[in-house]
Image 1 (cartoon, rainbow over the protein chains, first blue to last red):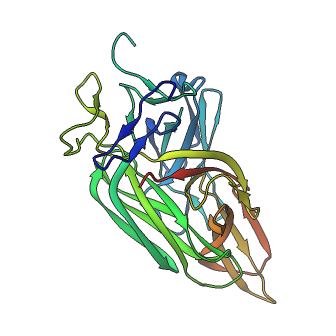
Image 2 (spheres, chains in turn yellow, green):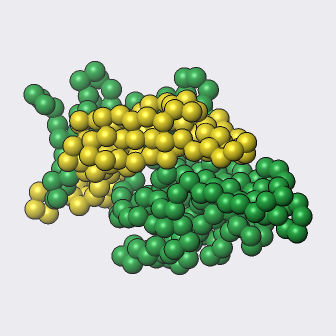
Image 3 (cartoon, chains in turn brown, yellow):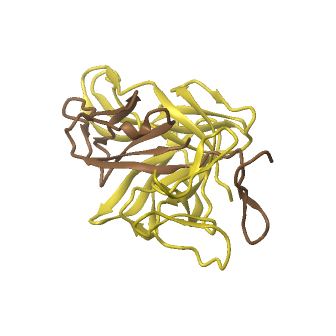
Length: 98
Length: 225
């Protein structure tokens, strides 16, 4: 290898190699059902992230927030449809993979 | 940073640092083949949200995904999965595998290896715990096959978790279906986001439909078993 870290487990298998992309948790926020909002995260500038909005303690009428990233801002938006669907309380979290 | 450790790969992408905790396999993996909801209790509940990697293994009209997390303060305690058949095609089961990853302060029992701690003494990386690897990231469209030709039989995660609703009058009064988008295996090197009916929420005299969105971010992953 040219440089970097290669980690093997006790069996000798490589569990991290010098070309791998792995994940680090960098942001967690719980949002109530009706909130649509955003958060500015200067620490993700220039880094690749994936954002999640996961329903918590939901039922079949509850929906996950949509979530997206633009620049260093993560935005989440609730989704409602009439009397049938309403947003769940969601945990918004983001991990870095570069 | 003024001190500490940063490990980068050959593309100068950070793998480990002394600030953010790596997601690692928590030891829980398994399979389901059901129509409906399946629940997995986390053996070690955590205050941090877990990640479940899924690998649909069934027919190309079978759909699965993560439905929600159960939270009981101060910890996440369960993950619930949904699995069924593509909307309007029936109520078949969907076979899939799952593996669960968490961030944890617990150290492995390994007697040797590499362990990195942050300034407050908590472990951020431990070579005795396996992280999953991201092989590919792309945008996938509901109803359109996404091909990852370089990666065979991977696991997946995706976001956001889209919902939708459809009312079908059916010659008078008909059902209102609550839809949810999951993943369907198309081949060992392709997958397709598809909608499935998660519930019937009522009846209607109208034909209507509404969808939260049509695209998802798809992460193709190596579970690092």
